[in-house]
Image (cartoon, rainbow, N blue to C red; front, side):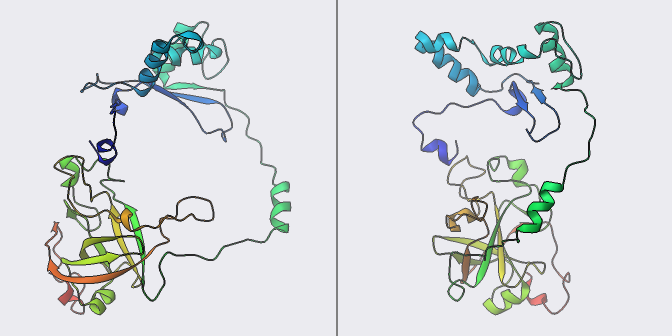
Length: 303
């Protein structure tokens, strides 16, 4: 169970993608209607149940008018009912009745309209708007004053662990990061010049402090990052999710202030931090041999 599940009163585990039925309509911005299909390729490994089946069973248990309006016994029956309107429609294929449509829909992976003639887009309206409207780029705003918090923080999804939901898989934990080759931990990337100013080197433990939180991270000296910026991968720092994920590395999301960007989305790069050396060291597990990689100038920074 992950951190959210530990706070829940009821846990209803769903199937994985390889165990699930489903359908999805392609983006409405496309030039034709397209409905994709997916079906299970293995039986459920654990005692799980699709979310749709949970809701449908609850509705049938309630009875009355709502059960009459939503009479589907399971998710497959619901999906089939949604496909009824496509019977006889001329698309990539046409089916005279529902069973044939269902079989073809599963066989080819969906249903979509016939290919339409491509027409050149009408750009007159776009040109008119662009010619009258100047580009508005708002000034960047950050949580944390520049003097007190001198470094921009970049928290990025781990190439291996993503957002951390799969951190309980040991084979992912032991897969080397493609850039740093670090395994089983998280790290903070510092420019060599920044590391020299702070008096830290590879495998030193530092405190990373923002206006809203603090984490401890292990230094990885990295010349490709800007001197005024630090970066920490997302994916570690769990307080639950099993023995392979719990109490491993740090979670940089604890440092992020709740801010929105110009589009109204959460701003992931709008927090500044300060770095405080602890005097401690922790050797990162990595495959890379750092000796001599970056020349003599920064050789003292690499262990």
